[in-house]
Structure formats: structure tokens, C-alpha cells
Length: 116
Image 1: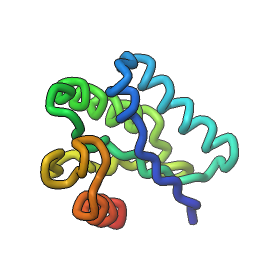
Image 2: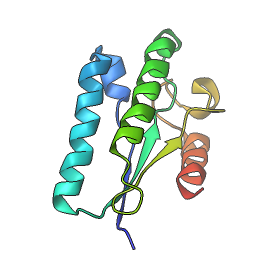
Image 3: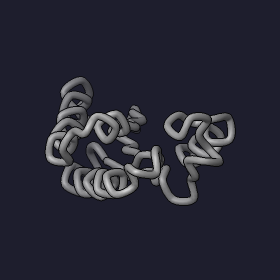
Image 4: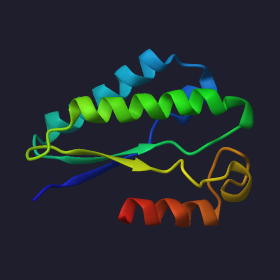
């Protein structure tokens, strides 16, 4: 039985212009720190929600990097890393109150995806 960590990071990297390489290294480092605290931790690693329309390409690139970090770091029986898709079907105009942060509908959608 695993203790589970829910990790949704990277939106600020996109907003601040952090490189995908640096963001990827940061996410891998978070996984390493979690495992340092608990070698058997299960990690639900979210692909980030959309934000400002002009950041769409960067969000897509980050979400691809998140999927690749998860695949590299996944230790299925010991410390699984499972990707949670918070991006698909999520609209910055419907589900965010300011194009960045989720509103009630966005939070509800995200909660359901964590649960699934």
C-alpha cells in the first residue's frame, strides 16, 4: 500500500518563461525528494491546465515533458508515477476565473480527474 502525493506543478514555469529543460529537472527533483522521504510513495503527476492563450505551445511542451519524466521515473511496484491529464477538455475560459487559476467548475473537474 502506497502513500500518495498529488503533484500539479509547472504553470508558474510557463508564466515566468522557465525553460522546459529546467522545468523538467525541477519536476524530476520533486519526485526524488518525495522518494527520499518515502521510498514507496505513489505519485500522481498532473499535466497542467491551460492558462493564457498565448502560452498554449509552452503548456503543450511542458505537458509532453511531464509525461516523459513520469515514464522515466515510474517504478510500478515500488513507487509508481501516474500521469493525470488535467489538460484535455479543460478550457481556460470556462474553467478558470482569470485565465490562470481554476474556478469552482475547474476545481470540480480537477478533483474528478484526481479521483479517476
